[in-house]
Length: 52
Image (tube, rainbow, N blue to C red; front, side, top):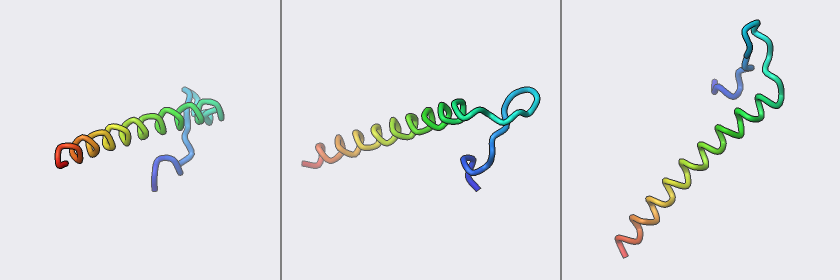
């Protein structure tokens, strides 16, 4: 099971995270994934350019 499908608990008293905090974490993870994808695509494009 992925981490996203497990309800996250935050805070010192084990309170559920607020919707805004969950959204911020998801956006940060999405941004990191997109940055990694961009880097991969740039490497692939550079490698393709070397072959031509």
